[in-house]
Amino acid sequence: MSGPPELEVRIARPEDADGIVALVVDRIGDEDGPEARLTLDDPRFGPGGWTVAVAGDRVVSTLGLFPTRTRIGSVTVPSAAIEFVATATEFEGKGLVRRQLDLAHRISSERGDLVQWMVGIPYFYRRFGYEYAVPTPDTIDITAQSPGGADDVSFRVASIDDIDHILALQDHMGSSAMIVAEHHRLMWSWLIASPVYRVVVATRDDTPVGMMRIYYDESTPLVFDVAAADPGTFRSLLGEACRGRAGATVAMRPGLEDFATNMTSRTNDGYAYYARVPNPADLLEAIRPELNLRLTGSGLEIDDGELLLSLYRASIRFEIKEGQLGPVATGGRVQAPVSAGGSGVPPDLIAHLILGPLGALELERRHADVLLGQQRDLMDALFPSQTVDVQSWVWP
Image (tube, rainbow, N blue to C red):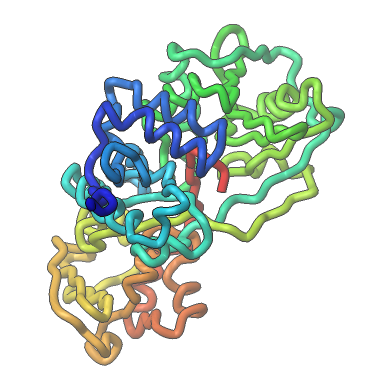
């Protein structure tokens, strides 16, 4: 008598597509199935962008690994976003998500990704190297009577031909933030085609001047990815989002703050985006040009020598010469970094340090194992408090 089929974890194949969609619908929701299908049917991405766990010919667990980019100041690095994590109920607790994440992280690393982003259930992904590095932004509640706006703005549903305009508008908004996790062009093609969202472009004299993505949650729309060239366009977008409804909830982002100075009723759910930095040394080397720009702009007088950053289980060093950081060098554990003239940041706070809004000084204030030592001013210059803008497929 044969036993149950062996569980295999691998990259998805075309024959897995129906099983992936069925599992996503069953475990995540009816509206998520069509979105999963969009990516599976796209020849630029297809099943090869997914991982699966299969029992025989049945898909019992899955996740999607999607391309994105992370801009850190003047430097943009390749990144990934993990979405659609789902496991059949009777196969939970068997380590299938862990095995798929191991595979997805390996694929991501092989293609050069330096950061992975995720929106996920509380705590679970912290076990796999993810940090709650970036809090979700505030939201504001508006009514159909309150937005006002410009009379010379028109609206239309976005098409694939608008992607270049959308990317330009998103770049415009992103210029207000120091850290930006950006949607890939592929992602915008799926969001435009998705039955779940309405992507709207605002035009003035046929020139795109704003856009937004709307999710209709029962009677109150949720509006995010808002981009606007000016306050009048911003308020017009909000008015359009409310059209035919009593109001809407709008996700704020850097660049919109000056447009919404008189809007109240702000709330924050206290949640955060997950981020993972698989190899801190590689990311720090990639952004070294930006770090050196920060040093130049800081006005600090820096003696030649060395910057030591201990992750306690490993260490990272930069030579400092003529006020600039040289290439990264890695080393072994340094348990007492301050005594060695360096700084210590535990590995589960490195994404906070590089990508989060707090900065080195605030991290030291909050965490007993963040120790800046005599490098405090230097670490503050390299890792200041910063504005962060995360574009995610779903709202956390």
